[in-house]
Image (cartoon, rainbow, N blue to C red):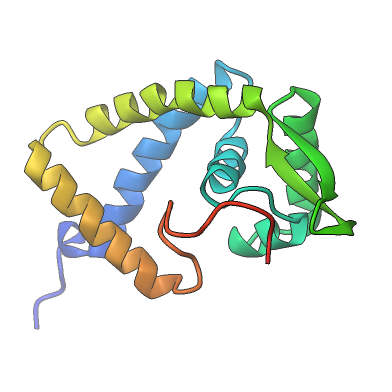
Length: 157
């Protein structure tokens, strides 16, 4: 049996494409004083609504103390705040501020620009197909994480 070429290894291809996309997006975020984890937490909050830090850390497979630093950064620059959960006043939840929601809308253009750069060889149909396939693989690997927009926003359950 002939050993595979590196370009036949899907794991390698996904890694290198992902690395290039992350690098380009990180450069754009850095110009705004943000990092990829800031964007990730903001996007999760936009998808799910206010959440406890423990829920966010679990969803992102992130160490709770590392998440705490990210949340503190977002609070310090006015992108998020921590408030009492109206459903259970003992709990504190993290939520996007109106400024954070606006920043995320603005960042959408940066994200789309990076997607356009990385996916330039693909036409619109191919991009949609790739996105669909990636979501399906992601759902297989992370079955507990609903697709964005599929879960009702609001106080955590």
